[in-house]
Every structure is written in C-alpha cells, then in structure tokens.
Length: 433
Image 1 (cartoon, one colour):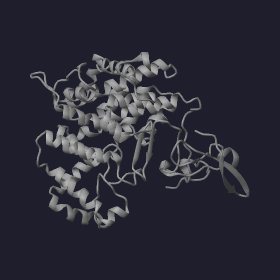
Image 2: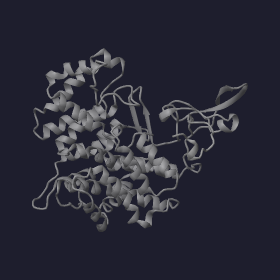
Image 3: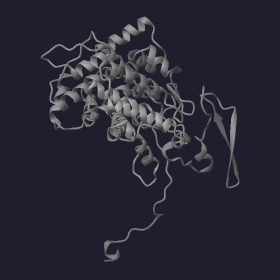
C-alpha cells in the first residue's frame, strides 16, 4: 500500500483527528483507522464489513460498478478464453503467468500429487450414504492435517508450498470420491496423462467395467468454470480462511473452514437456487407471470442468479458462462433444453424491464453455471463442492499472502455492545418465584 499523502479530518467531542488516506494501485482510497481507538477511544461500526478493507492484497481486483474482475491484473475474460486452470493457479499463487519451463515444473508437481493417502479413503466409509458431499468435504479436508505432517509448519516457506500444491492437486480427487460415494460407485483413481479438468471428469464419471474417454469440449467447459471461480477478492469464505489462518492454524484446517463457510446458501449455493428457480418456472411462456410475482412485494418469489453483493453491472463471468452453456448443450446434442430456454427468456425479459434495470439486477455467474453442471451430469448437491474445488487455489493464495505479510497478526473484530450494563449477581432465592 502506498504511503499516505492525503488525510481525512474527524472531530469527536471537541478533539480533531487527522486520519491518513491510503491509495492502492486501482480502486477506492481507504481511510486508515488503525490508530483510531488509541487516539480517540472509539471504534467504527460497519456490519458485514461492506465499507471496510480488512487487508491489503495484490491478488484479485473487482470493480463492481464497471463489471471488471482482474486476477493479478489480468482480465478474467482473457484468462478464461486464452489460458487454462493450471496457468491460473500458478498466476494466483506466484503472482505472474508461468514461463514454459515454470509451467512444466508446476504442472508436474500438481499432477503427481493427485493421489491421496490410501488410509484417507477409509474416512468415507464412516459417513452415511446420503451424507451431503459438502459435509464430507469439510471433514476429509480437515483430516488431511492428520496425514501430511511434513507440511504443517506455516513458518517454513517450502512446507507452505508443499501443502498448497497438495490441496490444489488433491481437492479434485477428494471431490470425485465424495461424488462417487454418494451414488454408490467405486472410487476412480487419477491418471497422470490427463489435464486437470479432464482428470476430474474421468474420476467422477468413469466406471471400472468400461473405458471412458473425456470429451474435450466438456473438459474445456469444466476448466472455464474452475477459472471463473478461482478467486473473488475478500468474500465470506476467503475472509474466513484469512481469519482462521491469522491464528496460526495449519493450512488444511483453514481451507476446511473456508469450505464450511462456502456451504452457506447465501454464498456457495446460489447456482443450485438459480437452477431450482428455472425448474419451477418450467416454460419460457411462464416467464412474464413469474416476473410479475417477483415485482409483487406481497409475493415470496425471488429472482435467483441475478444481482450481486459487489457487481452493480453485468457480472463479467456470466457472459462467459452463457457462451459456454451453449457450447456444452450443442456438444451433448441437447437442442431443446427447457431450462436453458427459460434462462434465456428470463434474462431477456429482466434486462428489458425498468424494474430490474433501476435496481441493477443483472445475471451473475450462478445463473448459467448450474445449467452447465447439470448438463455435465452433476446433481445439485455437488454444485457447491465444485465451487470449493475451484476456489481452493484462491483461498490458499490469499492464505499464503497473509502469512508472508510481515505485519500480519491475529484477526480480532470489534463490536458495538448493546447488552445489559454491569449488574450484580443475585442468589437463586432472591430471583422471585
């Protein structure tokens, strides 16, 4: 962060304070209040941190008003169309796009870490067959710290790197195992000659009794989904990983915490909710009636997959997802997918309705990703698992950045206390009947 050259004046009870204003590379300036309590004995109040920068980061930048998403300065559109997920992982983690030799070394490291400790697979037998895959993910990822003792020292740079590589590599294997367990099929082990996305699809959909050839169009679609979900600045799950990591917790525990946070329907379950909405509408001809219900304040109908906490313009990821959804449906010969038809009509109707335009409710990435995942063969219970798989590289990159910050310390938010003031204890006999 650049040194402060501007300041803000704050007057409290006759005392005037000069608070430094700091500027990043791009984006809004921030008022530095780190010494506010020491100077004036007051805190700031900002529920949900909607106006608070919780950290300094060089990884991801979002301009919600303009619909811009950058990974290390590179537009998400360029990375999704011209790069691949392995390259994106390297970029997020190390800060630059890899050279050809760096790419080979990194890809080899990830590819040859995809298998998990065989004893770890026995954890799955302890879950009920109908356990939600996200519950399995939280438990198994947390348990990795019991198996990989040689990469738990967060103060050792090489151990941090090994742990990071392990999670990027092993999450697809564990996610595929969670899927296979949920449908009663045997686990399929990874193959080192396949790409990251192709390997994952094979582990999910291959069976031992016949050969499975990965469709390159579907693998590319899966790869794009991973890229688009790889990081998204200081969202709830990323902030959870950082807060857990600030205590010195091991990296596997931190990622498990992030997965648990992502499981919340307001965060990682949005694409599932959008798909359920499209299924409930059922037919493009019913879109006008649905929109009327959404606009009716007495109705409980909500427009899922539109709008975003940060984006006040068209989510740049949604445009890529729309194109990818069309490519997948064409490749699979799904010429008349009712959900896709409903989605397109709903998007058209909403984007031409002043009610939604004024409220800046544009389609977000969840609106189309659910259609793609459904077409690929994933049940809705797996949608958030795939989100977690993709976001792992973002979480681990953010965790690494925080650990390597010489000024980092344990997170400790403040509060506005509104409970009872001090009062004295009364014996039970004096508390009435």
